[in-house]
Length: 238
Image 1: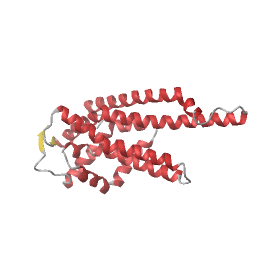
Image 2: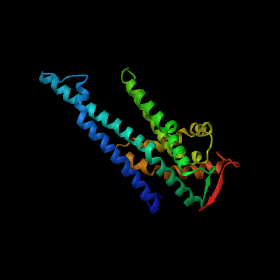
Image 3: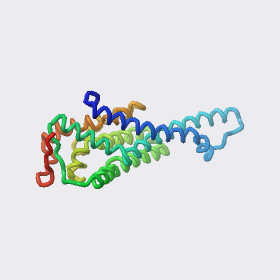
Image 4: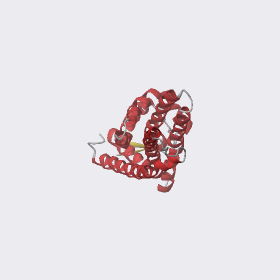
């Protein structure tokens, strides 16, 4: 649907371009300074064997920093700009499949934009940064591989929730109830978000994820009446 609908395709590619641009800028900085970062902890040794190990470590550090910079660039794009595109894609998808858009209380454009960006803090920014910190700390212990797998799984669950939560957040469903919906559908979110672990392709998947997430929410959650709010919500015909 995201590729067949011109508006969704244009918005998805715009979001993809924004994230790519920020990621490229972050990676360029990492490549330029990764040896200085390594040098702050381990100066290049004079021995040929140790120098070879230092070069290997240098590239490993670069790969790790590139991965982290990509995640940080994505989160920055989300908070500053991309979440607005996500919400618009979700609105278009909801109208396309149901012929209407169930909306929450009327807000000004500024209030709505601020609300959407604020939702990214508890929904994506803090959880993903926390899982990255746990992953890094895990490698200081023998449980490094285990914490890496668990942290990656937690990160993709929250990245998936960042998309499926667009509709209930827009309808002003209380955060506690939205988080409860996440806990009830952890397996779906893990399966939906597992594609976000594929390097490079994950940016493209994330760019169009609001479409699939909205389809899921309208066809399953709305059908089950999980977030019905008769006093606050209203319908807008497409």
